[in-house]
Amino acid sequence: MTTRTSAPRRVVPRRVEKETAATTVYHALKRDIVRGVLEPGHKLLIDQIAERYSAGTNPVREALNRLSSERLVDREDLRGFFVPPISLEDFRDIVHTRCWVEGKALEESIRNRTEAWEDAVILANHRLRNTPIHYFEHTEPGMPAPDNSIWEERHRIFHRALIANCGSRHLLRFAEELMLLSERYRFISMANTHPRRRSIEEHQAIVDAALAGETVRAVEALQGQYLLTLKIYEETMSDV
Amino acid sequence: MTTRTSAPRRVVPRRVEKETAATTVYHALKRDIVRGVLEPGHKLLIDQIAERYSAGTNPVREALNRLSSERLVDREDLRGFFVPPISLEDFRDIVHTRCWVEGKALEESIRNRTEAWEDAVILANHRLRNTPIHYFEHTEPGMPAPDNSIWEERHRIFHRALIANCGSRHLLRFAEELMLLSERYRFISMANTHPRRRSIEEHQAIVDAALAGETVRAVEALQGQYLLTLKIYEETMSDV
DNA sequence: AATCATGAAATAATGTATGATTCATGTTGA
DNA sequence: TCAACATGAATCATACATTATTTCATGATT
Image 1 (cartoon, protein in one colour):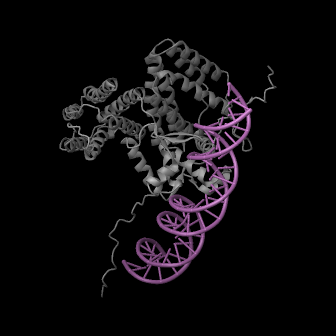
Image 2: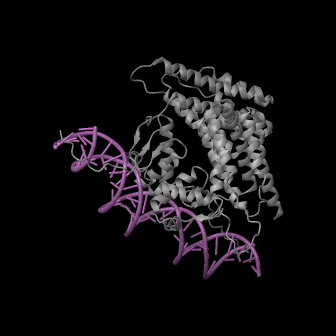
Image 3: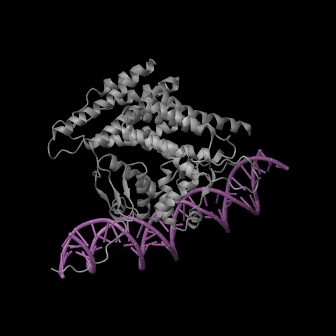
């Protein structure tokens, strides 16, 4: 019996997971708002945004509407869309809420700890440790802002890994939102902030406590880091 | 000097606070999803929704995009929008997260307590007490579901009042989202659930503890109520 | 027979374009 | 100070094109 050569099998993934224009704009806008490229308080003109991201007005409006429900853009009926203004008061609220939400999530993560979770935390921490941060100590006019996007990405992954085991989808969602809002303040104030050289040790302290099952110590270390960021921000604000 | 008869003054409020079509559809959809009019898992066809709410497709898409960021509709690129399915697991998560979030918010509310807040709580409780609930004990086929929308509204106001003094805009936002998600489950399971005749006493217990400054007792009473709701839901689920 | 693969048709999401309407806002003039 | 006006922009409806998904019928394979 002759078996013919089998027809060419589909090797590519069954579904390419295509993104719609609205989603592309959504991610691009999100990124630019978080990174401070679009300045706080700035009005977001539909046509400008559409041209900027090479899209039509419909996808742009959809993206803006999504972001407005995440508090990454302000929306007012018949007045349009705006990059949310920043304020010390707002940042205080974000940090304190974040301390509480992530504190709770970390506590639960530790309570439910598994080997897989511990592995993920260790790995994320290891990767973060080995990613250099580029400070700009010599603030010369012509020098572009250093690109720390890899570090930023791994930093996010690290913090997500810590709380990923909490078991609550909704808590994780809130934490994610607060992380982004918080990150925006970090980016915006980056030019002024004192470089955080101790962050490696701080992260290690959290990991050590978490893996040892010392919930209170881990939560305090985590919150301490966030509160320190707030303190630095408050100081640089008063410098002005 | 002659003062002419002044031109007709604008008597209507300076700003009518006009709503755009997108916002109208947003509220209508939100309401119908929370109240279970639109069934869990149901596909939301743009054209149908547009016709149902007498709007164009654009406002509908905007409303759906807003709701998708609040987890009141599911969205999938190129596949459309859906009413989120329900599950016991999801409801458990919602209730537990809500216990944490509102527990914390109530704790902070009590810590920061002022006379104005106490007044608001007392008032909201009073109004809720005096609003009758219409059960349908006699489940006859022809009988329409009883309209408790006034009680529902005041119930929401009561729970908002309790935590309104927490000082955190973001915590309140999360609590609001969870309240809506939770309310959906209450509506959907209403036909099956045992009427909650003790709710007046339960609310009173929370108020009494809160006004007495007994944080722990107040928080436990609040969480106890939510956990009881979950328990009842779990039982009715297993009845099937 | 049951399962799987193929492909065409139907369905629906998405994007583009255009024009009309309404509102917000700033300016002018009495 | 206040009303009328002008302008820019948001909002919306609509029509149409494109693309992806879903459905369904058909034929092949096991």
